[in-house]
Amino acid sequence: MSGSELAARVREILDTDPDEFAARVEREVAELKAEVGDGTFDNPQGVVGLEYEFYAVDAETNALARVPRRLLEYVGFEKELGLHNAEMQTSPQPLSGYGLRAQEAEVQARLSAAEDVAVAEGLRLVSDALWTHPPVGETATSYLADSVEEDGVRLATNMSDAVRYHAMGNTDFSADMRLDAFGVELDAATVMPESLITSIQPHYQVPQAADLPTYFRYALRVAGPLLALGVNSPFFPPDLYVEEPAVVVAESPAENRIDVFESVLNPDDDPKVRFPRDLDSVEEAVERVAADETVVPELQDGGGRFDDRFAHYRHKHGSYWRWVRPVIEGASRESANARIEFRPIGGQPTVRDSVAFLATFAGLMESLPRLEHPVYGQEWSAAESNFYAAAADGLDADLAWITADGEETTDADVLYSELFEYARAGLEQSGVAPEEANRYIRPLRERVDRGVTPASWKRERVRERFEAGEPFAEAVWGMQAEYIDAQSDTLIEGSFVDWL
Image 1 (cartoon, rainbow, N blue to C red):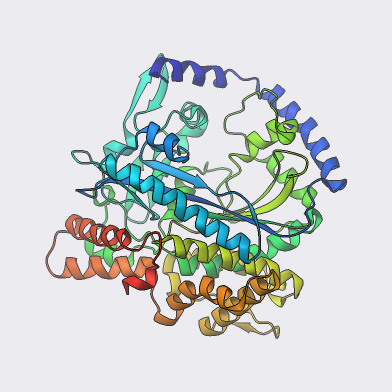
Image 2 (image 1 turned 90 degrees about the horizontal axis):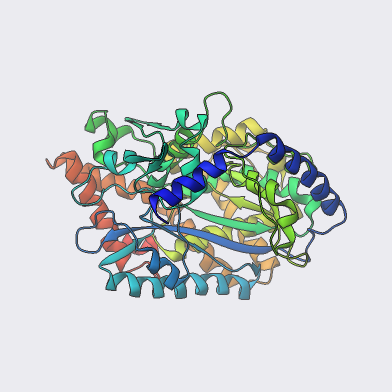
């Protein structure tokens, strides 16, 4: 799409009548609630899926690189926010031994094919949470902030041609789009700084839509502990820092990805990216999405999907940015489902680590509600505090937990011992063989046993280089080169434990 065509599409969206859009959402919400009440979104068992984001680097320099669009189409990946991004979505599978094996095999097969094509282009796809090395000859500041005006419309230079993202930079919402994190500041006037980060997003489809609030409540209680295991973004690209390097090395949060998303996409008066409140009913889940601020209203044309009957509601859901969010949709009536999208976890070092989070989260969603684990009664404020403490300190965070005996504890050994045991029990209950269940959980259990996360691995390497006299930028880029080199041998079949 040319710049003038993209600008015309943006102007078309910006001319949408917000009152008409809101009226359509209101009508659709009433119909959606009726379908939920009729059991349309119920299913016989838990189902899992995974969204997996990557960024591309130059195979020789490890610097960020733009991905040719034809490459994404060829290997079945999807474009994401930045020109350097690529995203894979797995096919939903029943939660079982066969289903989890299918999830892992699909990721491996598609990623292997993508790597073969990328190599031919002089590129490498990286599984990570936040890139640090801008394209050769550019700074991170210029790459993220560059934009042009086309017929009065601001277009981010290095953003994909997703019209909605460009439209966001031409609304009042854009005034709040600035990166404000530990030691870092950047004004961009577009959503582009959000493309610093990449993530994995496990999905768990609940059997009965009416029970969504129970699963959701448990998902919020395990969000902090799972995030602490997965932290992987302690450093930004060095040219973005305004803080002294020694302070950054010692004090930078373990998961800066949280601050990126929250600072860039949160209006000051009504935060959209946040740790969500508990739900009282599935109807409340629908109402929250409908009541959320609409960033870019757009009238939708009818299509062939079952849930196109709720197309304007689904459009609102696309900017309902919560760290854990309910999803109610389906391409057909038969596939209609209610599920939980678990968004706290950044991209991980390997496929096996990513699947470990999918399996562990799914196992917990199976066992905690079924066994009525007492952590259900943990105060929401404690779960929220856990989440942000985990983002700051990873496995060093003081996390609160309520044990199976109903006792409150901050003992990490007790917490994770129980967490893994319940995850294993949930997987076995779903038909996963005991040895397989242990294999899926083991990469995360090893992180606890060794006291190491990807973030602490990165920080230690930057610290060693910096204290040995390397300039801060070179220390960060040297660490990133080590990360990419270690991943090149383990991405598809190894695990992060192999790096230790």
